[in-house]
Image (cartoon, rainbow, N blue to C red; front, side, top):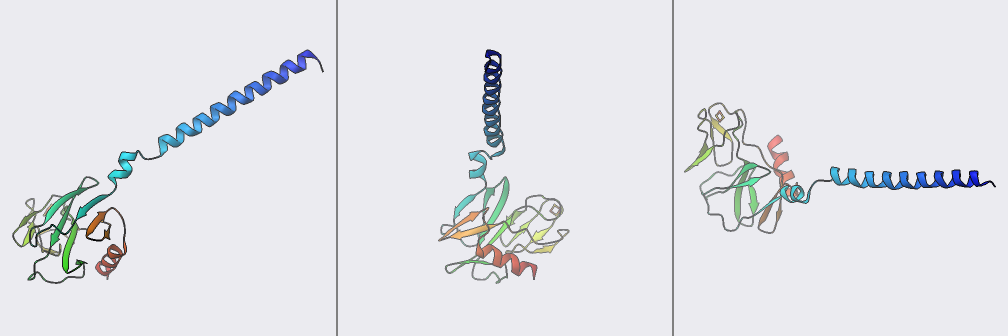
Length: 166
Ligand code: FES
């Protein structure tokens, strides 16, 4: 074997090695760019303790930048197919964006009222007056003990979502 051939082989192997390392680095870089940031992953879920919520006084939490209404129903509020039952309590869980044009309705003693065009929603989040074409939307959630985890589709969510479609 001549020196020339050895040198050519050496250069070929070196080039191949550099290209392989470069390619692997590029793949690692691309994977890091595609994977969601840890803060984004954590931001996908919002956990709320339900036991401290007072009946008739809905709370508003934020999930993925949206307001979420959680109302613990009082005894005299009617049962509804979208009631979330946790222990002995019934809750209404809804995305707090008016289904007309997306304003945030405000709770007024017994119902949510939308200031934009006068739409109203009852304690079960059903549209009862004005231009909203449908009830407030249901966010995906799961139940863990007395906590609700927004962002996960648990069996309770699936049951209510199915009932709402019927
Ligand atoms: S946006 Fe709520 S009634 Fe129009």
